[in-house]
Image (cartoon, rainbow, N blue to C red):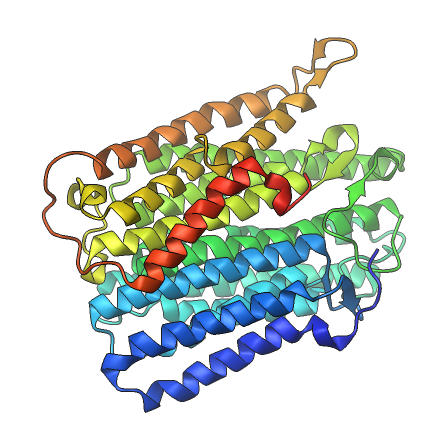
Length: 510
């Protein structure tokens, strides 16, 4: 449980980002069009760096049950800041090549980052909804930056309409949880006789968040929205939205288990908390039955997401669309991580989830930003036929993209290999009784399906890598050379993805 924190320095990183966004908005009309994509990206990056420094001095605690921070939440917020830095660097590349006249996109990306960090810090359904909507309302115009594109307008409309529907579902679920507990906090004692109302509220809140994560069958918006947006915005969505939504889902999950079990803490829970068997198995039979139903439902959704995402990405020729289905696949692994190390035996500890989430976010965002240096104006070169040999012409961007795709595929030495190994090995240990040397036939099919389709998805990434490094000239030269900001940020993050495979404990303690 976390202590009460002082208002400052708790909110200092958020305040810094707000001031930076306002500064970008004030400076934007004062700059000439030729200078906007030179000055504003560096202003935004400086703001992100200052917010990171402020985050370093934030102590664990909570603000009266609305927001909380701990080691895990701080690490996830740091990942969000890195994803934002990648997004700003990619925006500079995309908007410069598109000769985009405005500079408001940099302020919008900072505002979306604030919303995503708020989602990570939220321990109350009201603060979570406000943060979620702040992130969404800033991302919608980023998706539709290319106003003259029919594809962009169509993708934005689908994303906006479906986002409104699932936000309403989230609110309805939150109201049911409030009716069952008498509090908007994520954790609270359930009134006698209202356990099923609380369960239904949790289910609707979870569906609202699973939509944000792109988990099947709530993923249908993501291919169109990812293709509609500039590649840098696609990367930001793939990284930042997933971090915010899964951090919120993990918090709702562990607090749901505590509330239903009757062992309600007096303060918000640390995201790295270990929930022991006495909470999940030493409960009334009807509570244990509810836990089993929820666990099986999550496992089914996760496997559906893994299967659909893996099969769908194989036939994609657009890398942004491939990234959308990659997000569906990885969302399935992340949902399964909610049940680790062995939910059905009464153990829950989400360390593997947070590590996998951080690695995925950095890899997906990095891949899209590196891609922005290869595709040219309007991302017209975002097709395999146009990317033949692209890595040979832009070796730095090509090498970085190779590292990120290898991480997404789960290939060594990238950190994605360690992340997938932790999930798959944890799933396998579910079904093994090492003391009796027996296998639980009811559970072994879960890691088996996950492992088979992880290999299927890897084949899709390898196909892209072969095209990138193939000999021969593409139809175009991929636009202008990468900007200095993009080159530095992408290189540093690629090295970080490699370093995390050596020392995963740098961020989290699985």
